[in-house]
Amino acid sequence: MPLTRDSARMVQYLTRRLIGLVFVLLGMTVVMFVIVRLIPGDPVRAVLGYDATTEMVEAFRAEYGLDRPVHVQYLSFLSGLLHGDMGVSITSGVPVVQDLATYLPATVELAIASVVISLVLGFPLGVLAAVNRGRVVDRLATTTSLVFIATPVFWFGLLLQLVFYRVLGWLPYGGRIGDLPPEFVSHTGLLVIDALINRDLRVLWDALSHLLLPAFSLSALLIASVARTTRMSLGQSLSELYVQTARSKGLARRVVIFKHALRNALVPIVTLVGLRIGELLGGAVITETIFQWPGIGSYAVRAISHLDTSAILGFSIVAVTAYAVINLVVDIAYMFLDPRIGTRS
Figure 1: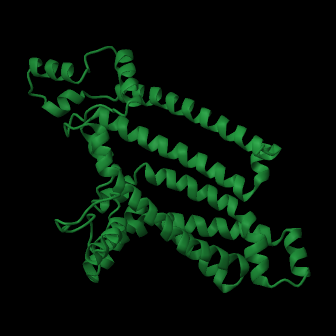
Figure 2: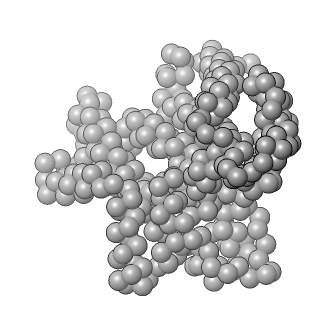
């Protein structure tokens, strides 16, 4: 079946974006590799200790290829990367890919929970504020958003621990899970999903109780941003001529808001959430540290503190790739919400 002109333009647009994505990622590997090599300090001494002998240091450098010229190290790194090999962590002693596979599911689970909480709370709050502009509901929503935006993430996390762990004793203060039963089978690495697959309600509650506080702490800023963006965007749509025309035709208020105004208002919200997902998948360092969450943010902190260059590079590549891919997904979502964007591009 032949493509229409608009469909052909969309395919061309996506093809250009995918090719551009490859060059962006390739360029970022060069930048990140050079920056990591320029970090002050000696990673070998950081691992072996400053009392290690010269022979021990040289043997360690030779074992990990750190004695070769930088351009040779980069080409070796790039060749390994194309084959799914990011080198070996000098602190854990295992391949970085294996480390990332261990830590990444925890970050993905935390990011998903954070975005779901943000949308469930922030989106209705923004809609209520937009359709009740200037009223008490609008003022309450705006004030709540300002409080969430003004509150530092670490302070919000500590406050949640104080209230829900120390005072009420309802939720654990940190970690990802208690004890897993020996028969529990991991399918996805996401404990909530795996507990549903295993039909294990005890593990499900344990995983959710550990997830709630860090996810809510991480979502506070996004709740406020989603609410404010929804209020502003939906407010503009409600004042547009086509919405007023729909009202003049006698359509119900609910139909005017959700069928005519809300679709156009979704574009900036999708942009906001998409960019935030990219950031979250790159590791929520502060939140993961406060709640002892075993994600790649915590992994990155340990790698940086030990000058573990292979681990730092692996984490950086995952973060940049996640951000770039999410941006591409957001652009594709634009085309479904407003096909004119794709054809104009």
